[in-house]
Amino acid sequence: MRFRSLTMRDLFDFEQDGRYPLRRIPMIVRLKLDAAGVKLPLIGWALLSREQREALVDMPCSSDEEIEAYRQTIAKMLLPHADNPDAALELIPVPAMPAWRNVATVPEQVCLQLAELSLPVPDLQRWRGLSDLQRFALIKLTRNRHKNANLHAALREFGLA
View (cartoon, rainbow, N blue to C red):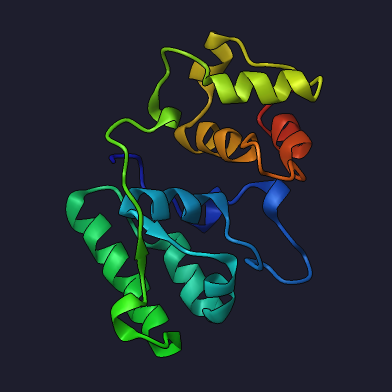
């Protein structure tokens, strides 16, 4: 998957919740979960302690070895909460070229969703200027079934609105 190591300092302002930090799965963890091919529902995240959540934020996950270690760490964290130890972790396919890595074109879903909401659509130069994590976040925040609650804030934070 290969992206630079991301840690707690890479949390976006739009995903901060002053009452209970890391209440929701932050984008840096979502990116690492996708890289590891792991589906972690919010209920699974809620079962983890604050220390475990911070560990998943800070744990490296870019080399093949780190990705495997990340996957195993999550499995161990979830094992005590699993009804069936063999099904403690739900694995998902990992695309060879995820859309957020493609800097040759702005993904159609991003363009369509932003246009539908009358929000500014980044041109190719601005798309390329975003970090991997920012592109990943925009793709996640513009999914059809997503509530778009943080989309406006993300666009402002990324200098796109």
